[in-house]
Length: 190
Ligand SMILES: Cc1cc2nc3c(=O)[nH]c(=O)nc-3n(C[C@H](O)[C@H](O)[C@H](O)COP(=O)(O)O)c2cc1C
Image (tube, rainbow, N blue to C red; front, side, top):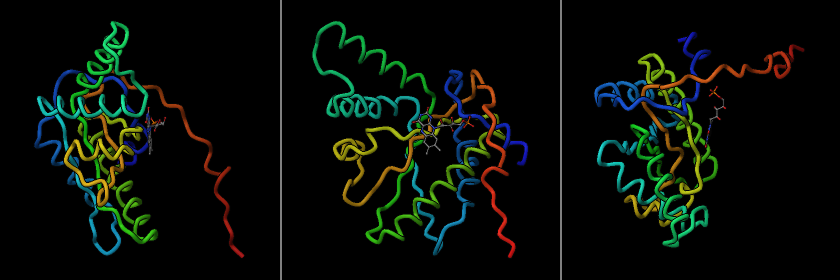
């Protein structure tokens, strides 16, 4: 596990091969051992794969068009841009959308989000042990209420925390390293 903490990298290129559902279940089971205040276990996952990706990707494209990140016209340039966006998203083997119930109280809200982040990192490290790579993404469509409704979530009550792109790594990026913790760690002993 200590090795995985250091060697895990965010993965941007995936092999075509899919990860078995039993391995996915194991990965997210490890995720679920994250600390969780009041044992709320706030995480929920919609795992889009195989044909399930089509409607998800359609909803993303529609959202990008609403937000203005993609044009809506029918001219060849726009059609090509939409096509390549669709292809890019569809060739990612799995998209794990992590969401939770919004809390009115801001402290509770932070607790739930913090716990979800711990869940995601546990899952990322477990995945790495299985040879599975992930990219943690936070993208504009996550904040688009219509997108949430399109995928069957209630935007008044639910919040998307992240979308994890997942699969077996085609390429593992080099280690960018980290700032020595001594630059950031202050011992206050007296
Ligand atoms: C909350 C969060 C959101 C992120 N969102 C993105 C993203 O949208 N796109 C992306 O390319 N990487 C994203 N990343 C991944 C970071 O770019 C990556 O962790 C960083 O470059 C360090 O690389 P490493 O994970 O390989 O050590 C995100 C990471 C976190 C923690």
